[in-house]
Figure 1 (spheres, rainbow, N blue to C red):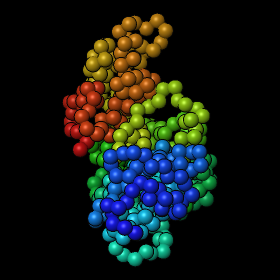
Figure 2: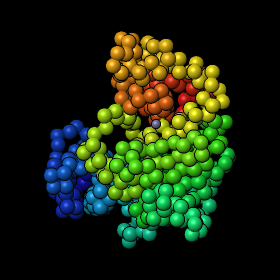
Figure 3: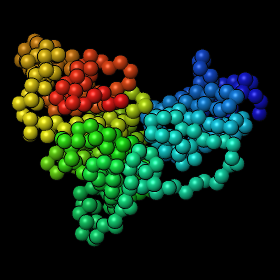
Figure 4: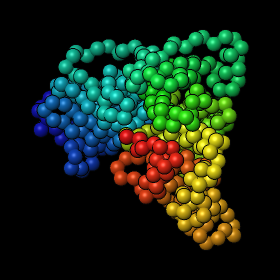
Amino acid sequence: MNAPGAWDPGRIAGFLSTRSPFQYAPVADARGARLEIANGDRPLGALVADPTLVQLAITLESTGGFEPAEAHAVVAAVVALAREMGLPALRLATFDPVIRDAARDAGCTGPLRHSLVLDMSSPETPARQRPELGTVLEELVPGVAVRPPSPPGMLRRLVQAGTSGFPGMLTLVVQPDAGPALKVAIPDRADVMMESVAEAVDTSLAVRRRFQNSLVHVRTLSFDHSDQGFVTGRYGGTANPLVGVIHLNAKLVLGPGPATLARQREINQPKTPSAGVRAPFSRVDAIVAHEWWHQVDAQFQARRYRESIEFRRQLGRYFGVETIEHASLGGEHGASASSHAAYVRLASEVSPYATTNPKEATAEMFKLWWCNVGDPSPAVQLFGELLQRYFGVGAPR
Ligand SMILES: [Zn+2]
């Protein structure tokens, strides 16, 4: 085909639609060629193609509902486009976990939370075999060694099948270069999105490193359906401080999971949604950070009760009440005017879910602090200052 300069949205749309079963509708946009992608009457997202002389940069925005087969088809079409143009590299900017998983299957590489790159200078290779999860974790999470899973005995298999909601679970032992190992249990299935598991492990170890003293007892991360709220898509995670286990909704790391969650949310919209985070952070990062905070918070209250009260008072003062509890109560009938005002501000400055109770308020703030991009909001800024004062930890990065 012609030189990059000769590319126009109409021609890109024409090419992509011959390579995948979707519609690509050009949209006027200053940044290269922008195309809206739909599968029949279902919008999937948008694609921005930006060819230069050295690479084809493609940004893929997603509505969050890509099925794995759709993601594989879009990626295959994009790779074919880059090959057709004869450029040495394809750079794919996307933060949709399902598309990223398909892109890695197609041979794209790159660190977590960054663009993925496919070297096009080598000849086309047949579809690769999926690597082992342990290999992927070692590749993507800095400084870890992964011990292969030991096959569970009959009894453990039965217990796991009963509690996890999956017939088979795989448990990997992730050993960081410092600190105790982290057990990671996932459904034993072929459609696990390994990068999403790696992200969860990466965030978990990073949070644990910073709050070592409060978190040494948390040794297990389990992706399962142990809670009915996971099956219905209502919850992303739960933290059990007593036994040091964090349960995460397995749908977050299984190929068809994100599309299922998107459908479930559409049917059953949450009354008090939790805060979203901005790219490059993913939903997995957000949920993992939130749940780890519950573990930190439980230790804080158990071991440093008076300080934990003071911590909540400081947060409350920011919202114009004596303590953050009063902001949570502000939604109740007959609440004082100041309490109600704090409740409204907590919902808008943090999230509606933060108004549930003080534990969720601080977990939501922690999540926004951990996954902050750009200038933090005043509430997140204050939360960070309190973490510095009470836990001696600085900004996450
Ligand atoms: Zn929570």
